[in-house]
Image (tube, rainbow, N blue to C red):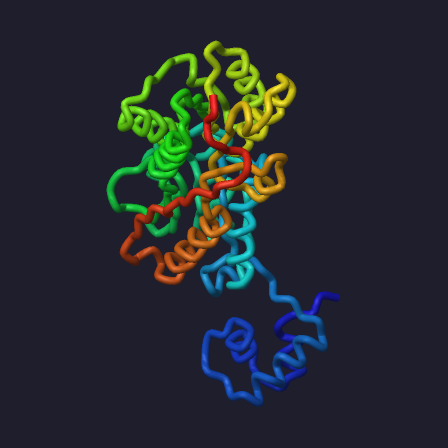
Length: 335
């Protein structure tokens, strides 16, 4: 038979209310009594009923996470940061892949309703204002890399423009004037800002911009491989490739190798995100470093604060800086 809170109370010689205060840490109880109750609960292997507990505390101790994709190291690092921070605070994480469709995101919200205390949402291709408009005002939400105006929600973004601008300037400083760019999803806010940073850096230096040097991609290794092969066949060939994320840069490295080109002797390659595997590539990949796990950690800390304050706090909008990590995949232009 399942052990109940009444069994613990009877064994410990106290009321059910006293046991509830100890297990929920919701009221004053003497140290000796607290120790006795916890000892009895442990000996009887009592596990509080989650549904009943949530009715008492108005908490589920679970956070909802909606991401546009669960493939690749970027998202695994984000989830790692979220989950580790949640666990340290006694919370669990319920993760859903939202794809890139507004209706699917709203369906995920409906599925999580009543099961989570708040949401972390990453949706860089959809107007975040629209997808969170139907949530109850009391439901805390932290937006990651979302397009949003105003100060109604907590939000964290990466300095995509600044990182891309700095990397392009770095390549120019190495003597590269023909710099190709592998773009991300066309409707993706992160991708658009990285493309804008690349273009403005070229414009600032008065360098030529050619349409054929900008190749489409979708943030996957396969699209980077395809674009890398196309760039290798151009004449004149660019002397450097800057990919909008590391996965595409890794795909491009493979395509260049297949085309018989040496990196960085014949062509330099740089990426964005600095995912863990970037340093282990051959050659190690130069990249724009994003504190990916920290992004998840900060989002979770912000959400937990919002939960604690019942979403009555002053909302925070923050942009995380990026830094350049220079490795052997980039060299001086000698052509």
